[in-house]
Amino acid sequence: MMMTALKAQCKAELLRTMRNRRFLLFSLLMPLIFYFIFTGTLGDHRMVDGVEWKAYYLMSMTIFGLIGSNVITLGVRFAQERTQGWTRLLRISPLPRWCYIASKMFAWSMINLGSILLMFIVCGLAKGIRLPAYEWIGCGLWIWIGPLPFMALGILIGMLKSAEVVQIVGNLVYMSMSVLGGLWMPLSTMPDLIQKTARFLPSYRFGQGAWSILGGHLLGVAGTVILAAYTLVFMVLSAYILKRQEAV
Amino acid sequence: MKSVITMEHVIKHFKGHTAVNDLSLDIQEGSITALLGPNGAGKTTSISMMLGLARPSSGTVTVMGGSPQDTAVRQAIGAMLQDINVIDRLKVDETLDLFRNCYTRPLSLKHLLDISGLDAARHQYANALSGGQKRRLDFALAMAGDPSLLFLDEPTVGMDIEARQLFWETIRKLAAEGRTILLTTHYLEEADRLADRVIVINRGRKIADGSPAEIKGLRGQKTVAFSVPTEEAASGRAANLISTLQDVLSAEWDGSRVTLTSPDTDRLIYELVRSGIDMSEIAIESGGLADAFQFLIQGDEQ
Image (cartoon, rainbow over all chains, first blue to last red; front, side, top):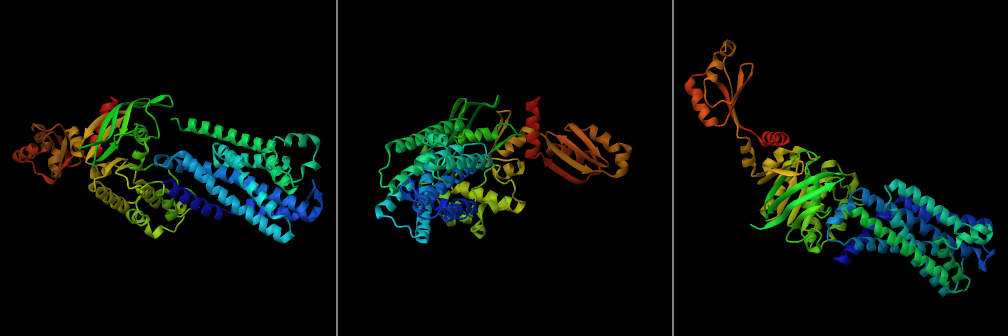
């Protein structure tokens, strides 16, 4: 039952995502456009933190797109399913609640994988980015696992009152985290204060992991721990709110 | 007969008032039971507790021998709830497939489309369906797990008369297969035509429980209506004659037509014939379920 439910959930999520113009526009098209604009204006070969800009910014924009879809699209979806009563229907089915959430997260990691491949292939070919295979794979894997805290955040924000509220709050969180986390512009170009606070942001730590792989470094322990801590906090909070919402 | 649902002394406090107040009931396997009551009587709250969506403040609810929260119980129940909008950007068949797969032994997609009459609409987006079609999709979703216990909360709202009758037909067939059905409805005719048992609740308590015929019998009154020639009505001769009869509780005149209320309309007919009143267009009616329902609720409020 769990496996067939998982498969059915994946299929449904994929269909809904492909039919969602907002997703296609904001999570796939916008990062691509930004990528080409900012590599065009700043020059492909400029060096940032010891990495060629066209490769550095590919990671930034791939991550930027993923944070958006995992916080906003996923959050809005949870909110909609709850306010429209679909969640209530699921609650009388034998499918356990955790299985529903886990299968949705699994489905989204499939969507994320597709987004990553799309970005890597389109930008990599268009800009002729040459990286060693292990860097492609390393960055790809990191960016594939990295959305976990953002999915957890999406689930948490998805518990807000309505889909409209989720949309607004999600966008605020998304945009500020992207700018302050150095995804739009490298952190080294920003004021000192922002550089200091960014170290605690999951968006910066997500990006930093990919940039350091490009720079030939290993993943930092601090970054991984901070991301894991965010995941844990968001999940515990969600579980707590969920319990309260359902205790009627 | 086996009990499928048992509620024992269930009390539910909800948002500062008592929605269900010491309710006990017992639903038998294979029966079609209608839960009736005015708005706010506690019908939906009761059903929510039977479905495990709400917990009783005190008392116990047992469904198929277990807790409504048990996975095994959930495999065997289905429900048409109110205010369910299906998820966006999925078509009818995709929605059904998604929900079917939550169950270990679901009905086939084809079967679900057949019994809900949605085969022609299977490729439409679920949230673009008409009100009646949406209700049929809710029905198909309720049947997805091949339930042996089916809850129908206001199932035919939004359906036209033809669709409603077709739906009743389907429900009767499901009951004949041995499934237990519990429904709430605002259409008393629906309860009368469909249910073999009616439970009336008001202000969270059970005030009547029996077959539709028994419930109607609680009112204990039937009516005989007929018309008399205009001059007999005008002269008051007919009214005088009627006032001498024993079995008349009340007489209501409307021009030359009179409606008599009586505990025994059979005997009243003999008396009327013997009295020699010139009657035409005679109609004998036992009060409908609507009448009995009104009577019970009013009696309870006093």
